[in-house]
Image 1 (tube, rainbow, N blue to C red):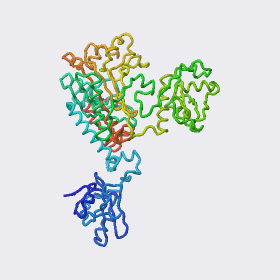
Image 2 (cartoon, one colour):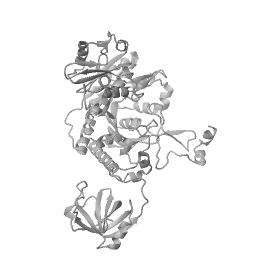
Image 3 (tube, rainbow, N blue to C red):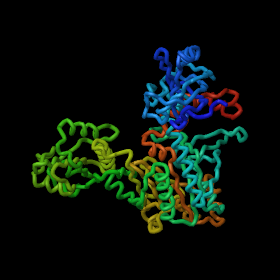
Image 4 (cartoon, one colour):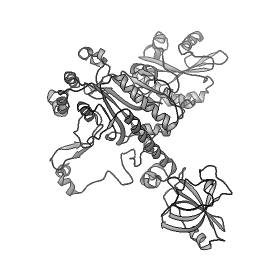
Length: 585
């Protein structure tokens, strides 16, 4: 028997018990006559004591141990004289009587501790060592618990977990596919699924009225903190439902997770915000509503101003930062530099201070008198002590910049607490978006999203104004999941393909199997997909999904631990019938 107990379970009630423990050496402290070792496993850390007076050879052997040696010890549980309240086992220690080295270890390239000295790339290269650290391990334990509770909840709601294919057909819509050459079908390729979308719709045709799957998906797109080339989503579909049925079901799942995992009761209905209002008041379709600071549009109020920027621009709007009228010139310059960053792109920042003594000071005093500035302040509900920050310019660009400014102010004022949660549904997205370069419409979500019934007549007259029967769950400014009611009528689906620029031949080649299935009695259906990695990261209070994935890729899409992607042999290329193409290129 390698162990009778783990390194995280012994307590004072186990005093005088003979035990066997196994694990990794975290730290060795030789105090002359006494040697202390912190022994670590997945469950925690237990202090070992080696007494030179009682076991001289054993103590010498312990002093020769290095970090990350794998050892087994036998001994007796004793009460620690110097207790450690920071760990659960901090009231006991093991008086070691036997020591066995199970495996030695080279000196690790970074310290296996909570606050390590290893950088991101180094820890990713040695990810198997990084997994031994408590913060990484805790994130993966959290992920496991959340996956268990998701399955538990959906099972009680009569969902059936069903696997869908990983080798599928490539489609040009959406993100870029990862493709896989077929050896047996020369010159032809599979694609890895960006989502199981068409298969879950086919399951609805097949009568599986409640489907779910916690599934790997793949997108060949540029990466950032909340994106990976392979990611996991909670994929769900339901038949004979309307939008409210889906929102209520998955709002229930979200509340269940908060209650069981974090002990937080969200005993209210999640607010529902239209896409139009989200853009109007927050400049984003994933607004962070942990704090107010909504946009105020003053374009009409200042259009006759002598200030040329205001009178000649598409949009003038701003936010009110409560209690910030005492901001210094340096702080205002920092904010100006922030909005002028290339990735934000504002030309400058205008401020109005409504001072505590009732006076008003602004960067546009030359063009507005005190009464006019006070009138503008009323638009913002500004009070004495508040600071109004204004941006002006092209509508979409300015809304985006104002969104970034709002989030920056929220962070500066401590309003974006990671232990506070503000979920909402964003609904009524545009069905289509126009691309100037290709001069055609693209689906905002995917080609199978249904228009809102009341907008059907606009499909012919003004397709750009058609709203989708689609919805996103947003928590703390993060899009956690999204979905839609699907088109289940063959005639409407054909009309949608036509709007998206598909010829009948192209639609048949790519989606003929789905259209054919719809001829055999497709039920009304809809669904949703949650980003599982993002949801776990949100619960863990961290920004990067890499930290909740066991073996993530870096920002270049590489697995630096196994050095992938990598070349393959000429023989393999030839077998796949692509060697000649590559040589010619």
